[in-house]
Image (cartoon, rainbow, N blue to C red; front, side, top):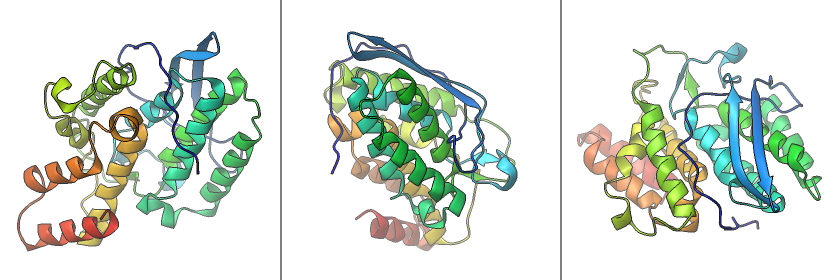
Length: 270
């Protein structure tokens, strides 16, 4: 089993929003460009630019994202920043493998499962990886994440809800956790769970069943963990239990339907 490896890295400026995917392979259309800077064998800077790639919606239509797209960019960047090329490759492979645990993956179409298989095979063959390998793998990671079912819905809402700003707050704490500036909740200076749930658009999709609501909310939580690994996996400053607690106490309705959603979430994330 692969585990995320921690290495020191310089603090970066908050990354701003927007972008999308492919896989040089089965069915995903390239619209992103990833770039890394390497000094003394460590990746000191990373970015992803370009327009958003195809989503899970037919024809690559963007629709409304449930989890903010900017967090997918952060996902790839945070796998590599401050890491050697080998560790960056291993972290990106781990992140791709984690996506198979997302509720939406159970309904992934064949083109997407083929893209995942081909991407993982290509990543394993990067031995040792070079700069272009890591840039390709970053891009493919974001593209695949954006294509997983439950990621986007065709419903059109009133537009943005400051998801980029909320994600920027998460990214700032991620960077500070990676560099040892933040080591506990007390160092955060506020409840980061407002940012976690601020990157979820509750208006993008309003399913009728508690089971479907739970799948969407669990996918968001798992995606956030993968996007900000130092906060949730390496330094363990916050946890999924913190996410659930905030959701249950401050967001979910307290009636019978809300209780059903909670039970379904607890079934998926005991």
